[in-house]
Amino acid sequence: MGGVNPDALRGHMDGLLLSVLEHEPLHGYAIIEALQERSGGALSVPTGTVYPALRRLERVGYLASEWVTVGGRKRRTYRLTGTGRKQLEGERSTWRAFTNVIGSVLEPRRTEGHSP
Image (cartoon, rainbow, N blue to C red):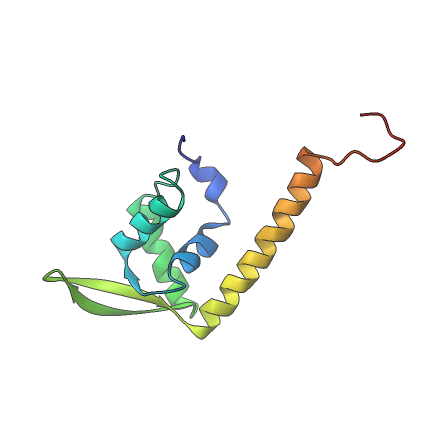
């Protein structure tokens, strides 16, 4: 499968990042790996995009972070806050509505009495 155009991710990065942190805290590189794994390799998000987004999400209270030692190295690990969980649900709801609208335009359902 080919990669996803980075422009296509605009507006969805917050939801993607919150989603990979839903079940466990992760450090930045592990977040990037989780995005790649979950997408079957289609999402290769540069660190220059991920780290500023993580810092922004922490500033607005959706994430909290702490320094932990992982494999002998200190890494900043991020976790979802209660507010972040609510935001993630909002992101999912918005995504479902968006895909329904776009899908109804790109793949309109045939109705009886109308020509294809």
